[in-house]
Length: 632
Image (cartoon, rainbow, N blue to C red; front, side):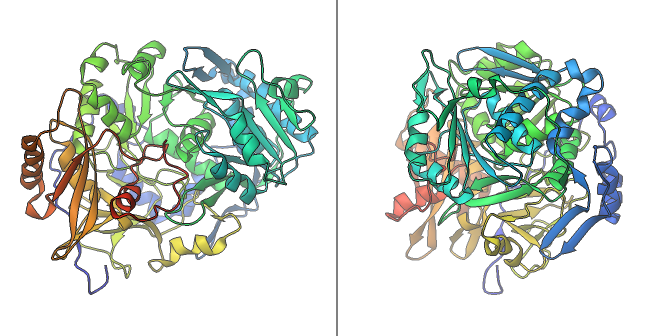
């Protein structure tokens, strides 16, 4: 948005405000956001210093923050261990026998781990890692379906300073191979199979193919779920149960410098190879601990259900580390939200008395497609706090999610990224909500909307979302590629550029409008994809929508929409015209799609984000770049 470019048009206006109930506000940790926020940014180092002291450290820090733009070190000189804080911290009191993890398999199997039992399993696994000769700084690739061993392996690596690289188990052999090679992992932990809508997904052959070309891998440990177990090629391949069998359930957590790498998580680049985002023990621990506690108002009697997979950052931060740091009871379930029927998640909420539910807009829209009768079949009265993550939740999906869960539960519409490690822009339960807005920055976080030169923009003018000061859970680098890390800080001077376009309204609420590289330029107007998609989804026949810009002789670009209809709706010329008229009414002439295709599905990452660049590449006959993260 230099001087030659028109400011980004923001066409969507959200005027509905949903205030929290008196009971929600009274229960919340933070009851006066404005006062707390002002205090936290007046002296952020004092704020984070105070929060960090709620956790346990082996030795204290000399300095809270060493900021040498754009490189940060937090809690300088301190030693800690995130696995110790997730487990040992809770074992000295009553939480030793509290349920830490409830796991439900796709076929309905259930496994329950108390904090004491989880610690024993993690310690055995840590000792087994040591028996293989793994030491601090070595890398382990974890390629597992959503089973408890995933959590155990992550915490075991962290316990002894080994760096874990979790790779989502839907990835192909070439995608897995590139991630193992980049990390130079010595060990791969996998399973024979995963399950998806009753289909058996064979994982071991994928690993065999990937590892064949990875000279660094010395051992492959396999969780065998099927009986009889598949044959393993000794000595390189080892059964998980046999691997842990002889190990003692005691293993001291290693005191690690706060800046010791905890994990590498690969996030796809729009082009080129995936980026290995590096997070560390100290700052990441403090950031995920506090955001989990305050955003979800997490209390000791809550049952917390996040539907993500630990293969994504949401699973790292808000299934494994953040909730366990808080001593929470976590429900995690294998399988899809609509299998064996669209009541799957609602049934789990009723059965386990879930009070906090964190999901994605994509999943909400999928469930919307099946109608309100499914959630109505279940008792959802245990729910207290709802959450949304992954992309902006359009107002229509927000209203549906709010309504079918009882109409009183606040929705925490959270904005953050793999690179940020923790939630950065979000409501808190006591804050008035505007459907479709991520509201305002989290405590201690300074965010703004600026033009390409870094100049702050007036209210309701679209620009780039940026973070202007460091925060504890920020990534420290891109593994083996520090130059790539610098691009986040050098795109717009003196701030972290997230790559999202956004506007702030008169109340300082942030409205995310899509990815900067998805902006469509129509007749000199720059329009964010999220607004047009939101307008389409607000039509009663539409379940989901994605829009792209196509070259146009006179307008520069024209909008093309891809639409999934709700069950029972059918394509017709009248419907297509009705959709165009609806967008005209909602947003104005400039945003009306020139073409609308009715489609059965949209290309998405496995974490549920729509991949508009893949739609655009296919439409224009171009190479889509890295599509390793795409759902089959």
